[in-house]
Length: 314
Image (tube, rainbow, N blue to C red; front, side, top):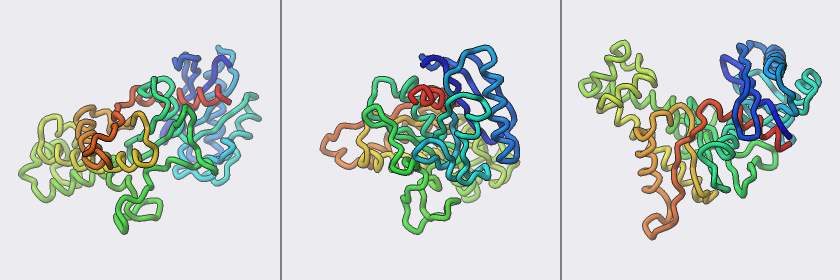
């Protein structure tokens, strides 16, 4: 199969791109994300039709945030769009006249990194996306692991802390409550409130109050050496590394790939994550082989490229 289109459904925009066999994006189309579920379907179709105007397209892959069924056809639940058992594949196929594959957006991003990014050369990869929450994907033996019902690798909702912090999913102690962008902001605000004299740079980047601190402020302050900002990243990394160690016990991959907005900080966060991972990895003291923790390479393109390639796989 030749050219395919990948679609990435974001909170503010829907991007569609024509992708070739090497993972290169040849053409893109972006439209605003509508407020209604019906409008989102219309926007997906419009973006696909615009992106494909100058190319012969053979299939479409859609990355959707939410639970996607085992047939890669129906969005069972989407947290940011009011989709409940939405037959997205059928609706889009009828409109664009092309075969459509629907996949969870984190799975699509993981597949993109595996095929064309940091995962090249590895057959067994666990990808973890650190953003507002935590997403992920697992590739074992070169195959994307989706589970019986299609909803595997929801890493953010592994319960690391029994009876811990309340999560938006309704459970308590989920990993993403301790190792996500939201958690980083909470750490920064708490520490700045407790020791404002040590957070002068951090507080100065916001409105001067702990509640005015945002994630971008913590990143900038940490680069300037603010002790509270640096410590906030270390706390985040401690939880990320502990979670990766648990995933190593489950999957024993040849590499971990860490992506998402937080990973853009590079070694500021990745080196403490690696240190924490080694600290908590079972068997580390007797020389157990360790999978490297790698930075994702494709950035915001991973989901679109991965979705397009999954459409090519059929």
